[in-house]
Amino acid sequence: MTDKYENPTSDDYMGVVMGIIMSGGNAKGLAFQAIQQAKDGKFAEAESSLNEASEQLREAHDVQTDLLTRLAQGEKIGWNLYMVHAQDHLMNAITFKDLAVEVVGQERRLQALENK
Image (cartoon, rainbow, N blue to C red):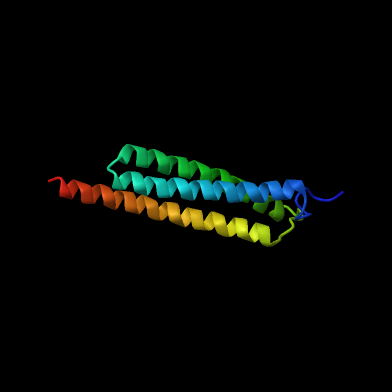
């Protein structure tokens, strides 16, 4: 019997990979949306989008943590370019969301100064 994620071409494995990629992509899109909403002065909507982005990232991070835990416990986890891409996608989304938080904050500050 093989470990669930040992074969990097199995449906289980590819489902995990695609889940990470999709969650990362959704989070990045929501973070970008938050920046656009902030530019339009819609700060409550921007905060909501950032919260949704955080939830998407949490879901992907939970999957990543599960894989790392399994690996640490001795389960064989296969690796391929798809998984590398998924991890890259996730890290990029995390960085983009962190930057979006800062941009939204700066936009809020800028608009407050302009409205004085």
